[in-house]
Structure formats: C-alpha cells, structure tokens
Length: 347
Image (cartoon, rainbow, N blue to C red):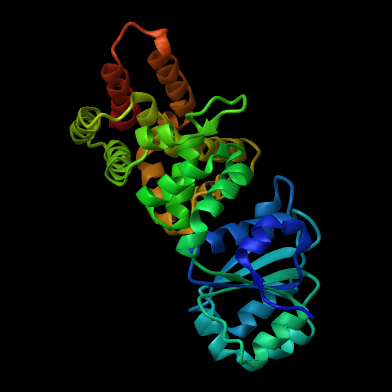
C-alpha cells in the first residue's frame, strides 16, 4: 500500500521514487523542500532548453482555470512534459479542493503538477487521492539526535567528501540543526580538504567553523557586494584578529562567489545563443535557494556582468597567492580581492 514518503528516504533513495504526473511536497523545512523540487524537476526535464518548460505559479493568486491551462499545454522544449509548480499552494488547495480532487482522479499527461505546501492534513479526501495516484513527500525538519548522522551522509552524497562522526557532532554543536546552514558550512569545508581522499576532521571544524565567524564572513561578503569597501575590510580585520584562517576565509568567499560567477556565465551564454534568461533563472540553475533569491538577485545586479565574468580568475589568483604564489602577505591578498569585488567602477 502506498504511503507518504519521508524526505530523507527520498533523498537517500531517489531512484526508488520516480516522478509521477502528480506530486505533493509539504512540510516545515524549506531547504529540504527546495532540494526535493529540484530533484523532481531534473527527473522531468533535461537539456539546455529545459527551463522553458518550467512554469512556477503563485498559489496565493491563481485560479483553477489558470492551472488547468498550464497543465494542458504541451512542452515545446526540454522533453515531452512541462513541469508546473504551484508554490505556497495552501490557500489554492483550500479554495479549489473539489476541482483538485477531480483532477487527481485523472491528471494530465502533458505536465507534471507539483503542489508545494506547508501542511497537508491526512484526514482529507484530497490527501488520500494524492497518495493513491501520485507521489507525496513530507519535508520535516531534522530531529536533533539524527543531525550528526545526516551530516556524515549528506557530506558524502552531496559534497563528495567524507566527514568523520566526531567532526559532524562538533559541526552540529556549532551550527545547530538547520539543514540549509549545515549544507553551506559543509560546502565551505569541502573546499578546504585535499581533493584526493581528504576528510573533514574535528581539527578542521574547530579551525574553520564557528557561529560568530561564519556569520561575520557572510556579512563581509554582503558588504563587499554592496560596494561598502571600508566596512568589508574592517570585518576582514576582525576575522583575522580573532584567529580565523586565511584559507578558510577564502573558501567561504569562494563558495558564495562561484555561484554568482556561474550564473553570470549562464546569462552571457544564453544571450549569445539568442535565448536570454532572467537573473532569477540563472541563479536558480546554479542552486541559489528560494529563500535567498531576492537578496541574491540584488547582489548580482550590484556586481554587474563585467566583475561577475572575472570572479573565477580572481578567486583562482587569490588562492595561488595565499599558497605561496606571491610575496604579499595574506591580509593584503584578501584585501585586494575584496576591493575588486566591491569597486563599483569595475562594473
């Protein structure tokens, strides 16, 4: 008998749960919901033109007629089916429950319909029909006792690096149980271990991770992207005086800026091919989470395409200089990078 699928079971066993014509993703953990939606989309669509077959609808502001039109439209790009996502669909479901029940009995074969909800009561007829005819995934927040084990497994699956159990326990102590923040920290740590079998250890976590230092580094990046050069350099001084490792600072800077560099490249390539894409589409393709999207769009526009296209070269040169490629001291090397990022004249 079919039942609701837990988000962790889905994440660890994706092949066990192929996408259905009807999918429901609900729960209180936005990071996991974002990850699930991305996996489902990638199962439906492929190729460079796949994004043209994605339709996002605001569940607080659409009618059932709007939805019916979208799911009945054949895909022109990216495969045979469209991917129609209704975001924040709780109000939509309560307004059009009867219509949805009828649709669930015979969903369209032109599109995969995904409803993203905060809650999905199990005592409703709609819930039972969704279980019977589709794929229903519950995205719950992590339970504290399960966090260290999740860190170990997530690090290996998503970031391709081993994390020992003691390091995972320390990471949980310092960062907490919020999956999105833990993922960001693991991405940063993964950049700091050797590519040939390196492991995230207790020593690395102790040197490179801390709630105040992590937050301060993100604030420094935000200041630089906003053009507040002096404030960003002052924050850099505070981090160095607190004992933060220069390589660790660069790793965290690189984690954020590489996504902006990749998004810039997508935008420029799309324009050359005659199929321009929006900043939001480019950011979504490189994995910017929805709850960071508005802020990231503003930062991309502040950065500009000239600096955005040079980020990878700047990061590579800074990394080489920190590892002995320059006679300049480490502080000056990082300061130079911050000035390049924040100098509005380089737009």
